[in-house]
Image (cartoon, rainbow, N blue to C red):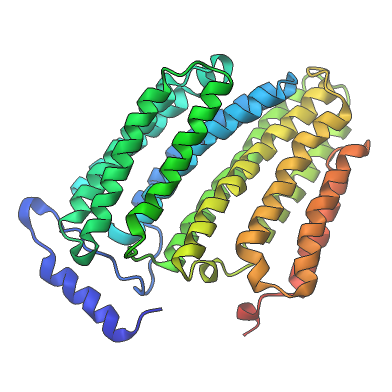
Length: 402
């Protein structure tokens, strides 16, 4: 955390550089030690459009898995979810550094929201035909708006001007490559081209900030990640509830549906408890740790959203819609949960826990996979997660004890 004198320096810079011209506030680095820095209403509004994109991606993954199209379904989901996650993450980290909340900043953010909706509209075609034209167009709309934000920030960034310009240049170059990506034939060549473009995208922050880092507010950033986690977990509950309602018309007995409903709630609540157990703001104390925290959340978010698809697959098997075996269906639930557990343990829990917790959480992730070999869907997973929660309650982080 910064000293009081450094906080005053940020405040003085804002007062000096702010200008009423065109009713715009000059973009200057935000104070990373600013007290009471919650997520803004604009950020919460921004998150809403991602509910749509995550919901469509999860639904398409469900259909692919239910038909046994595992490789194509998972690779398509990974590609689409990357675009969703990366666009959200870039906006979030930019906002913690340069948010002005004036009319131009709001309009540019709304343009990005439009890009998300375009991307979401193209997700079904990407899954069914490998046609990424609409998702790439929506993605580029979001990224061009982000270029505009960085160029605007460079005018008032002071010593961070070169970093802001490198962001704009790096993002622009990669967008050209995404356009070239569209002419690559589907199949393995398309996957290779995607991996190259994705690696270049995640390299832009390293390229832009290798000399001097933009400031970030630890509590604000981790609150934003927590809110997005709530979105994907909430999507799991909603999708599962809708699937259970649909399945109720196909089954004579409600007992299996009630069981799956209760177990789904128990699993989702446990994942929420586990995620928010650790003091996340302590996981981003350096530039390297902030990269690890941000990038690892790709698999955390993707796994949480995929969990609902797994529950829907289980219901498809139960109602006879899918011909997958019980073991195959169970893996669609247990694998996302295990990935979620390992991801959040690695990025937030590991360095804030004692030996017991650091043994129980990863071990629990491994045991969760055993559920696939048992004839009781989700039951063992729920029991394992509840056991992990009990251990976490008994071994609270030091910060919570004080």
